[in-house]
Every structure is written in C-alpha cells, then in structure tokens.
Length: 245
Image 1 (cartoon, rainbow, N blue to C red):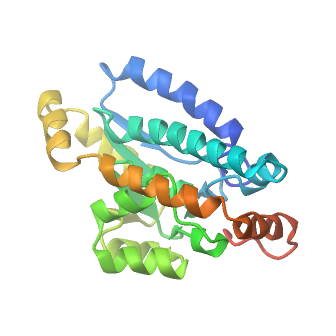
Image 2: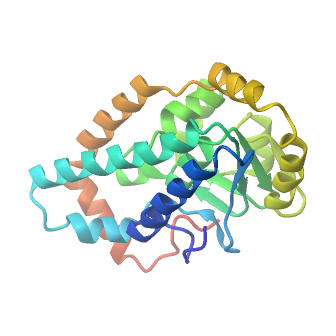
C-alpha cells in the first residue's frame, strides 16, 4: 500500500485493491504466500477516508445514505472476504498505525506480524459507530471477549507488545515487520499446498452470519444525524488527527 498520508481507504485505495484482487486470483495457482504491507513510513493504514465519506454523504437524503452505506459495506465485505478465504498463507506486516479499516484488513490475514512501533485501534466509537468491515466478528475469532470489549468500548490504541500478549498478533520484530514476514514466507513456501488449504478451511472459518449482523448495526447507527455531525467536526477540526500515535 502506498497512498499518503496513511493509506486511507477511499475510492483510490479501493480501485487499487480491486486490481490487486484480480492479480491475486490469477496468481493463486503459482504463489504460496501473500504479504500485505505499507511502503509509507507513516503506518499500515489509518482506516476509512472520513473526509471523502463526509463529502459524499453530507448533502444526501437519509434514504440515499442508507442505500449508499449498505452498498459500500457489501463491496467492502467482498474484498476483505477474498483475502480471508484466499488459499495462500496471508500475512499482514504492520508498522506504525493500524486503525479502523486498516485493522479490519489485517484481521483477514492468517498471520499478523508487527514492528515494535505498531499500534492497533478501533476508534469508531468516537464517531458514534462500530467497525463495519468485519472488524468485530474477525476480532472475536482471534482473541478473547475481554480484549474485544477493551478495543471497541474504549477506542484506545494498544502497542505491539500488548497486542502480542493478548493474541491479536503473532510476532513482534525489532526491525520492520515486512522483514520478518518475508523470512517466514520463505519457510512456508515449500510446504504441501493441499495440506495448507485444508488446514485453513478447518481452522479459519469466515463468520458470515456475524458479518451480516455487524452490517445491520453499522447501517442503523450511521443513518443517525449525530454521526454526520461528528464526521463534520472531524473534517473541520484543526486538532491533531486521532489516528496519529
């Protein structure tokens, strides 16, 4: 990923993501491991592009907002599910901020490796929302319920050591996370393909029912006028941005 300032997931990122998924599908017979990482020093991803979202929805009617949100969530789930169900071993190599939709992307991967300065957060509660791209079901799939409550209800960020201790990530590297990811990928790529695919299907089911429930809750919350007002304040604010560590 390479879209400054911090790989916000707006239209430009999603267009590149669609191109990437096309290549991924074509390469799945030959490739063995997929590593997702950022080329930016600022971090992995700050999540959704809130400014773009507000500009698109601020003058829309409530029915248009509801329809637009549901369509966006459906497309987002298709993209993230494609990573989740990929037959490859998927690794998120996280350096810097990994917030909101960025954390949702990381959670689709089989393994999450982090650099020492990585930070993880679901800040959606500050906007009157919950994660909408599968963050809650996939977080529940990986960690205990007390960790889920901590991340969702406080909006606080946690560092790499804390994330490792609660099982959110798999390893911490003193250098860049992508270095560790590439080292592990070299070990994995020689393993039996059929065994890898069978293992993934057994140990990593996609929580489709809970993904749908999350979509319903997110859509209901988003259509409230108070959410658009919080988005407006975020867009117009001159304070330090909340995704900065």
